[in-house]
Length: 217
Image 1: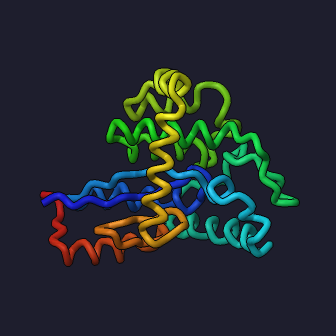
Image 2: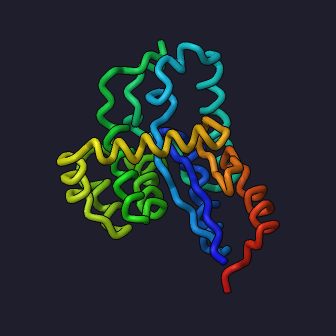
Image 3: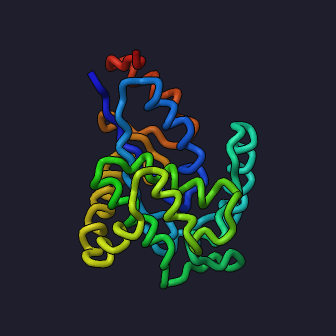
């Protein structure tokens, strides 16, 4: 029996990106489907989050995510530009957010096709693996999407024609994310039980094995 897991993911989260190799290996090794469900990052989802957070929070995320990438041998550099328009000195988040809305809606469009994991993996590499500066320019995203079997121009056009459709998908994802019992990303949810963090995949596998998870033949 194929088991099913939801993965709540943000394009701005380094840990979401760092979770992708283990997630893809999970799907390759075991009879399981991972339903990647994009959500907006806390900077957008929780207005004023950074004003209330400890100032050391952002510095620690930079330090820790970089060493996780080094330990796991995952190509890594913070995106240029940042998917969130934010003053990293004051931590103020701009009202206008052109990048993260486009990315998250594209993820929602791929989710509607049932292929969000492969799409998000391809796009996230362009943002995070350090090979591209100015990921939002040129045809970087279009080529990555095409390699994953998507037509980026068609996706953008569909979203522009009916943005509310994709916002409803994202809103539904955020509601189910909150209902799972955790607020951070990446969060894996299996049978209503949350597993937060890229370092919880092994525990997730352990739990699914108790529910009949089997290796692929």
